[in-house]
Length: 281
Picture (cartoon, rainbow, N blue to C red):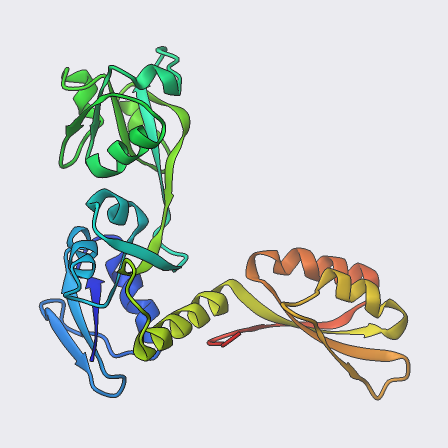
């Protein structure tokens, strides 16, 4: 039976359960449940602290798990990313007091406060920087004002919290994180894990793409297909109306309205957009 770790709380929990449901797996209905067995898919789900998931998977106690890329790196566990899940995005940045105008090289010799010491130490090592990492469990923005650190490394979204603390971002991003599926480093993919990967990948793609159908004069079909090339090639079917064809292609959801405008200007009509609920590509 395949054993999979799922975040039991935090920003990744609800979305992890949602994507697994869309992939055809049973999920718990009571947040107090720690284990759920899905006999139809021969899978056992364990609901664990997000920070611990990479460790359980890395030791081989569980075959796979959903966690954040940031948490995987921070853990130092012998686990590896096998699929990005396109939710739970976050960006990690350095921030220092406004007016310091620091550059990346200026981090050397400084005290860096963070709730992700493993992640920051990994970044410093890869960039040949030497700094003192101060581990805090939260509210790292206050550490500089209270004299605990010279700068911080933390998740940044709007930056409003940093501004309120008198801090500003500097340097390139430490990491762009999101939810990922992981397995033990070097372990082989068994058939049940391969099925899980294909199902989750199908959901991710279905969320990103839609089907676009439209009618277009035959003389413009090459230009239209250049606008909507699809994943491999669009489907083209003749219409009863002379010199017209119907075209169907998968397009990125975020580009839908722009593509519809371009097709309309080209002479396409009857443009329809359909959601994709699942797919295998």
